Every structure is written in C-alpha cells, then in structure tokens.
Image (cartoon, rainbow, N blue to C red; front, side, top):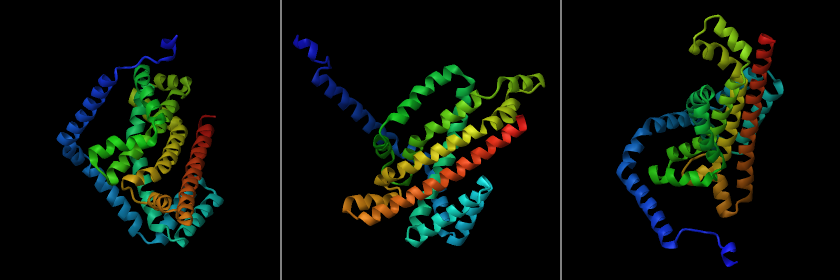
Length: 295
C-alpha cells in the first residue's frame, strides 16, 4: 500500500529543468525588453512625481482646507468633516506630514489608474458572459495571490523604485473596481433598460445615461475597496522603494522602534478611516438620490 501514500509527482530532474528554463526565459525577456518596458512607464512616473510634489509642496493649511471641503461635499456631514481635519492635524503634530502626503499621492494615482482600467473592463464584463467567464478566474488569482509575490516580476522587469511599487499596488487593488463595476451594471433594473430601448436609445446612450448613473453607488463601493486595498499594500510596497508611511513602519520592524511603528501605523489607519468614511458617505448620498429619482 506504499503507493497509496506517495503523491505522484514529476521527476526531480525534469522539474528542476522546467523551473530553470522558465527562470532563464524570464531573465532573457527582462534583459532584452526591460528598457523598452521601463520607457513605456515614463509618463506614469512623471504623473506620480508631479502628484507627490503637489502634495508635499502645498502649504499644510491649504491641504487641510481642500480635504475638508472634499469631505463636506461628499458627505454633507459635519462629524466626518471635523474628523478629517482633526486626523490631519494630529498627523502634522506628530511630524508625519510629508510621509502622509506621499502616501496620499500614491493612493490618488493608484485610484485614478484603477478607475481608468477597472471601469472599462467591468463594462466589457457586464456586456459579455463569455468575457466574464474568462476574466473572473484572473481576478480570483489576483485577489488570492500573496501580495509579496506581485513584487517579484515587477522588480525583475523595472527594478526598485516608485513605478514598480505603484504597479504592484494597482495590480493588488484593481479587482474590486472591476468586479463591482460589472455587478453594478448587471443589476440595473431590466424595466428601465426596456424603457430606454423603447425611447430609441442607442447602446452607448443607454450605457452613459442609464446604466452608469444607476450603477454609480456600486461603482463608488468599488472605489472604496480599491483605496482600502491600496493602503493595505503601502507597507509591503515600501520594500521596493515606495516612499511614504510604509517606510518608517518597515524601519521600525527592522530596528525594533516601537513608537515609530505604532505612530505611523496609526497614521495609515487614520487615512484609511478618513477615505472610507468620505467615500461611503458619498456612495450613500448617490444611493438616496437614485432612489428619489426612480422611486
């Protein structure tokens, strides 16, 4: 019965040769095309540097006023607005302002990229069951893959720096954006779509004027989840050169600086709560507005 307990596997030499061939193939690809791929991401690098400079060079009172105005516009809630201001003041008081601004700029760029990539993919998935069957397993792998694994191919292709970290964060944070866009559009009431068809709307007009507005609360939930996952990836991305609140946390782990790690960790939590409350409140406002218009 020994054969029953032994798992059938490839011959050790064959498996070793296969792994070696794959590794050498990937190394050859990075040597041959690494510079070309890096050049393709130069506009993204410029956008990230511009965003970071904007956040770090703008005087702190202006940043606080702008963020408070955004919080008020999105939520219409005094408590959320005051909470946002207090969170930022505490971050500045504990001398974490520059790192926080770098983190916010990274999250901003990641969110923009996730929206630009995720919403079109979600629309395509919603329009085709075949495409959904193809993309869903890819999203499953992206969501279950350990976040450290994303760093390996990105670093091998682009080295260490801001852009590789940004790409790793986007890959990790993208799936909720795609899934919830798909879900929101698929759940639009069929009676509303039939009414749009009856009025002679084209597919593009139906998408732009009916499906997207009705799916907007669900899409906002996707943006919320994308921001949360991007923040969760910030500390890991700091291992490959992403500046911000993640680097002091990494330094605290390496050198056993308890207070440094706790303070910067709490700053990340504060930013996460701020983004979460504001985006959720805006999503609820959109939901109430849609119910009033179509209720």
